[in-house]
Length: 390
Ligand SMILES: *Cc1c(COP(=O)(O)O)cnc(C)c1O
Image (tube, rainbow, N blue to C red; front, side, top):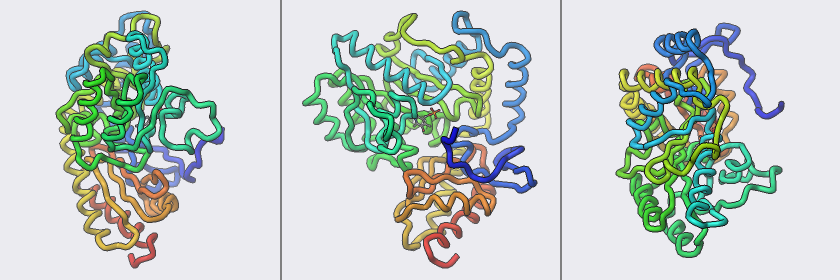
């Protein structure tokens, strides 16, 4: 159906950070399928793991034990400090699981109309519950009635959350992206202090702190999970995008009391956590660790940000440049979606989000030379777009 305004290009092949279209033109991938292809394209170790698993067993059912799923859950628990994992197939499904978990947690405590604190400019997905949790009217418009039970506050405003805590006895959880992706690559001004403040409020009131790391997780910000730049651990965390390197997989992780909420029959998925998707995710985590890709995301993300800052210094119309590792946003003073097509013409894949923010989510494997090539294409395009000289 007509759900996407698509760029006029068809890719037929990829290798590393490069893609080729049907005419043989080569493109530098600055978007990684929107934070999915962390390992770039056609990573040999990933292909070997997927091929071997496909030949062995693709799918059974969650009615049975699944060794690859158990191994992946163990590995994710080890990396994150969480206790249990529910597997599904996408980010919105992972958030649906988190929302259901929070509601059941509330009901188990005797709260009949549980509500969840969510943020302005948040993005949590396109299903009915997750678009209701999303803080963007464009995502919601036309799909009313929205799902109830969400209380919205500004992002990066602890006082607003504390105010809700004083006045609303129905709250059971806070759902927040540590770094807002679709909302414009927004991060808290005081860094870790925001999550630590939310942790304190949640502890004080018996709420669950639920982090949507669907975009920021799996190495993207320079650590396995963005919350690891702080001292806190969440109660619930959701993952998807980079987890399976393109095989569809999502996960809802929980810790402590939150990990004991679901019991058999309360939630489920036919495909979720099947052997093939889990083998791809296990291989993804192994390669990220062996090749030090978290460190690379931090280093190369900073190379891109530093070089862009230098190239765009004093250019009127550039409002801000923000990055957390390889989540990079260049905010302009005007809508700039035209830049996507212009970059494509020049052989570079980028994205524009929240109308005015050029967003880069390169593969985690990008090297410094490729990063400089990216900047060498993008900076002149932005300068020209803003009306200056190239
Ligand atoms: C992309 C995204 C989602 C939705 O993931 P889907 O796999 O498209 O359902 C949810 N939350 C965040 C933060 C995202 O970036």
